[in-house]
Image (cartoon, rainbow, N blue to C red; front, side, top):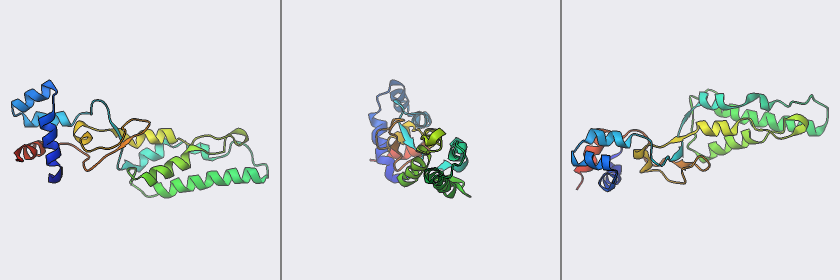
Length: 183
């Protein structure tokens, strides 16, 4: 944790009213206080992962839905639907090709994923179907810990995930000690 975040952490430590935490604070159990901040926030706060392993995104996609179910019929409409699906698939492939991770904390990356995976006209008769946007969305967000939640912004629900702020990770015993040393 960056030292600039210690004032916020200290304020949270001093303001915490959970009886178990108050006992830890009174007993100067800094290691256990750090552990308290490293469990899921209550209530759960959902935030977009700043980075997601590319393999997780790849595996959540319903790749077969990029291929039209109907046999080619020679019409312009069919060709347009097939080309649209191909362009969406290519956008995803460009994003994933050779990548170890995907910058899913960026709104433009999430928009690309949503746009390319939400509506493909490849079902029977050109009906719309998804290539897995909801499954991908579920792997590109996660619940924040209590410590992370101190720095998150937004709604924080599965429907409208929040954003991780200046801190993502685990609060250490040293973070607790450093924050408490502040005047």
